[in-house]
Length: 542
Image (cartoon, rainbow, N blue to C red; front, top):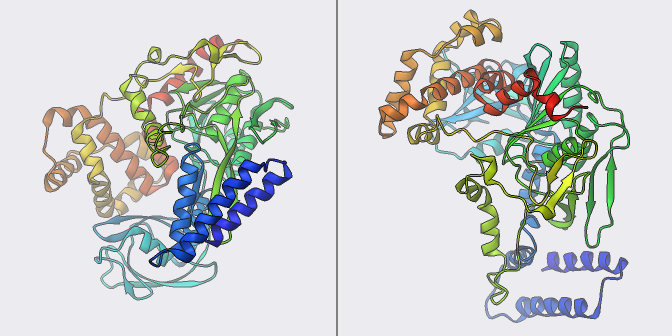
């Protein structure tokens, strides 16, 4: 129960400094302490006190808002790792295929590549303990492969074309977790950068990629934040700084007990003047919305895609003694024009039944995207309605924009359902497409590498052949996926593109994957249209 007591002391100490500890609050805290003492000392049976405390904290936070959360120590470690920019391990991208770990790519200049481990190798044992054919979970395998920097791990490798197993001793090291999925010239003078999260190294990665594209003649930029769920506030501020002029407001935060804090551009950015298109969708959230909102409010760029998620609550991490953490909402994010990014939520329901309070509304909040789809908001822009009370104006051109739940793009791109069928969804869900790609790469890697020395040659000439498609259908039959010729033909262009993109990823990296897949991404194609057909100038006649 010490965790709960220390949490109460920490909160009370912070509240005392703000003179927020009134008689009612003190009585409530005494009530909680008495209940805790009674359970710990008088209850008829022995209880797991830590579990009870965790449940009490979780239940309290559930009454507040959708984003105030509790995480145990292990969850905190896993949660922070993707944003910190690195972890310690052997440095491979892998995939589990039929209970065997298949290496997709070793990390460039990472520990595994340095000792000679190759793409296509299969790890069958770690420190002489078998991991292949034993139905071990991916999490358990990752635990065995990861470890402290400079520690060693012995790997047993099976390599295609080599009769006997190979043995490697790999010294673990810090492995970077990159924020950028792709950075390339999508057309002459038009660059493309895709960011998957806002982590500790995002600004550094972006600046390096931007400068490299500028060396290649980039004048205009497509910034892809589709699917980017957010991350660190400072990373969002640093990215927005790349585009805005000195002293232009990026975002401000304000809450009941948190005074307004303003965050301004320093004017040191590397892309303050070129044409800019930002791509977003319903999964773009938090830090993505901060950047997008600032760019839209200052009329700095054109936003293309679908309305963003609408996560605009500021969480303060409160570390607990055992490594667990409470993330408590203390303020809201507002764009430069004063728009609140956070979509509506109501955690005051079920007041007559405190045990249920917050649960139904949390589920409703989590179902919001499905409700948007059902209402037609992802197919038709005119299905989205904003009340006049949420109307705001951009800072320079005084264009009308709305608050109250995400960022509405300047140009709406409906979600593409034309090639998605039940047959295709089943292929993806049961891993048929991934497995077919892996099988093809294993059989043809050497000839593909000899035939296509450079990606451009592959991208221009390679086509999915009928044999690979036949293998897809056969694998689907094996997985008991009923063949539907009409649906198959409807999804065929999408299947071919996905297969080619996955092959490109396995032969090169994610950068090449997106160069293939973006040819069928409607938002990317709309961004090119905005830049090439003078639509940009009509929207932003600066």
